[in-house]
Length: 250
Image 1 (cartoon, helix red, strand yellow):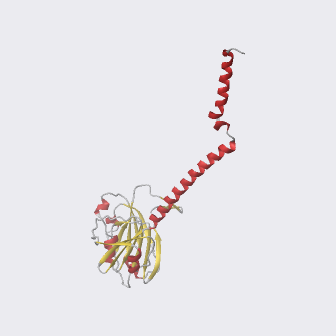
Image 2: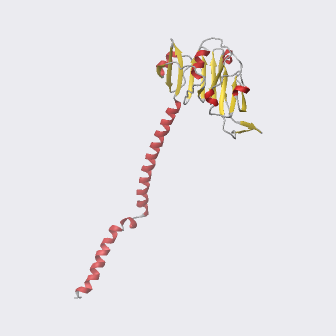
Image 3: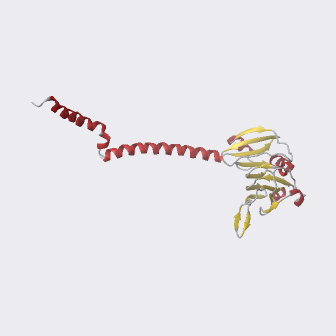
């Protein structure tokens, strides 16, 4: 019988051999089973990521579809949040389908700087109402609908930062206009090299049945008062801007 000191290495080797499969279980696993476990975990992660992205996209689409509608009815002004376009001047449908609340009519101050985020639709029947709602306000996407067969005088309303305009009346079908605030040279549209302020002047007589909505822009205007003395102007704007792009919409 071998001495005990000769048995000790064999016992250590036996214990080591029996313990190796436990801590080397993952290393000795067949490649297919290891890949399957990784694949299942990765698929769960992808599923969670896709569900999260779908939720974010749907929420963004719902928010982007909302637009503001303002109209006057029975001597009350209503501010509505609508998820889709309502047929122009359909007050009952707007009150039914949109989230509306009564608001106070904004005062028509030359220095006012009201701002509308997103799309803005206004139903109006006279230039006084329209002027109080849009004159010297900031809005990029605007739709104006004249309700009734009124004939409007020639007045100029200032709209700041306007990029897309739609107009509609009983005497004219809906027309749209994209306003490009950039210099056009050699057929290419280039952004101005110096900071500029965009101000559009809307001729209210266009709702009387002009065949086509038009615009004309003048760049690098240093003084609106001097170059366009007949157009309304705000001293508040002149205090913060040195160069203008003036667009006439008619």
